[in-house]
Image 1 (spheres, protein in one colour):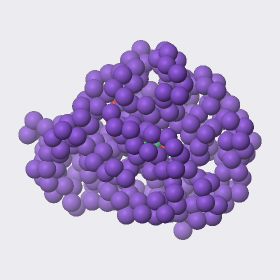
Image 2 (cartoon, rainbow, N blue to C red; image 1 turned 120 degrees about the vertical axis):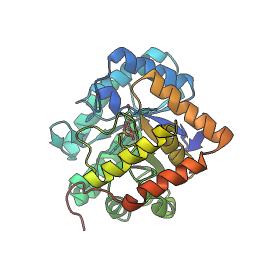
Image 3 (cartoon, protein in one colour; image 1 turned 60 degrees about the vertical axis):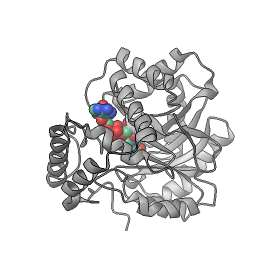
Image 4 (spheres, rainbow, N blue to C red; image 1 turned 30 degrees about the horizontal axis):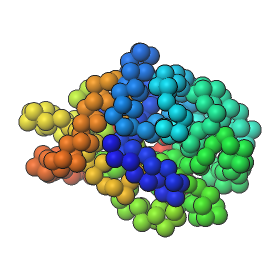
Length: 316
Ligand code: NAD
């Protein structure tokens, strides 16, 4: 598995990153043994980057990931763990007090002494001024205390990233995590890459399958896309299936092909998903993409290209 540098952090993260929200049964129920086997299989294939949050399954994802990483019995420096703060099953709270409590809870859930990255989770739902003046300075203290190594922010709309990055001193934020903006239906992250590079932050993209839109089982009920987006994606899935092709492979390869993006976090909850997704990467390196099918899928998705959905409070 290719390891790519993550901004200025000095970390090298696997191109395919392990999205651990399925471990908290965020999509469908995932048995703990299957989850642990999936993590082991991913690590065996060179996946070294694992992303979770106390929000996923109300801490279940963190706890199961912690168990699985411990079971690997490898040195702590062999894997990179990101978790998040500020978003919880019962709502949002980015106050200094909650964030301090949050990292201690996360370290306990994960059975770790430190996490490599602590992200502020979905900042569009909170006061960005408080994120700048209170949350980020708290994370800087946690860095000094050795509980976290690097600071990240996550969110759906891009304006929340620029708001924060334009107001904090350079090198304060190490990483950004964008999701659902670098897949076949929506590739708007591309336009933001020069800006993020100018700010010296590493870029992670998540949800290459657009949170289940590009799977044969379809998206979960809570998926926020409009019926128009859902139906175009469903049509694209059916088109690939009729040709005997897997749209998951095509969509994942589309995200992985851009090496300016350090890691593509794909949610996985079983050994077979890990195997398929690692193979998608290997085939991309060896054979390249199936350009013919990609063009057909792009044509199907053209009417909804780059359409997204509202998220959070209005920060205009
Ligand atoms: P995704 O696009 O990666 O889709 C995940 C879904 O696809 C799951 O149901 C999974 O079981 C299924 N899947 C994966 N591989 C498959 C395969 N080969 N065949 C069939 N189905 C397959 O969406 P995601 O899980 O939401 O995103 C990936 C990760 O990124 C998350 O787990 C999380 O760690 C992170 N993330 C973070 C944020 C944020 O911070 N705001 C938002 C979204 C995602």
